[in-house]
Length: 234
Image 1 (cartoon, one colour):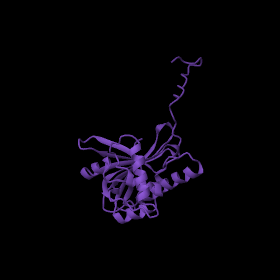
Image 2: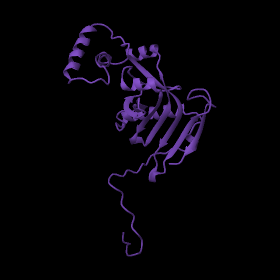
Image 3: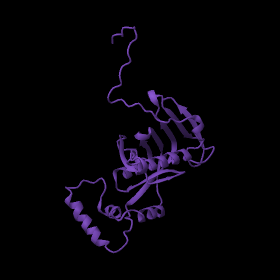
Image 4: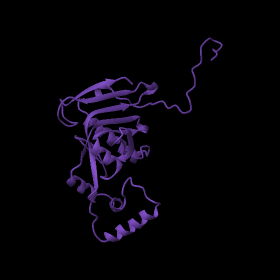
């Protein structure tokens, strides 16, 4: 790069694909000793922005990573449907690939990411089945179409075209016409009992704020004394 006439080397213009993460960041004074309040606040903010600005189209989009029988990582995006001091949770078929993998190896990692807000939360821990009573309550509140599809889909299994799905849908729709749709026995859910959590907040020039909570005692995400929090290098 040649120097300008006054001897100063001009600054390289940013690449077209480079985004400066000009977020609000996260200062030490905003970081609680236990992480649940921060998680809840960020989720609430993301959901509000979905309504107010429309720049967070799916605020509960949740990337969940497992390992298969060969120890190879596997990841997919689901929706976070539960969040309490034990940890976040999601619903799925108990016959799905992720459920089979979690039954064999219950270690799991997951991420909530909100690019428009320059924020992300990472979870690591063990997967635990959500209890049937809680699932029944949640299933009863789902849209009827979502309830019916839980009976139609043999999740993760191959299918020869769309026609078999449409045919199965018609059969299930007729079967439950005029009555409530019960939860299928193979429709369940998983919760992450969190051992480690990280909050990431983007800053300009890649000097991001990262804080990690590591379990040091018994208790949920809202229990003082159960967590050690540290700032991490960007």
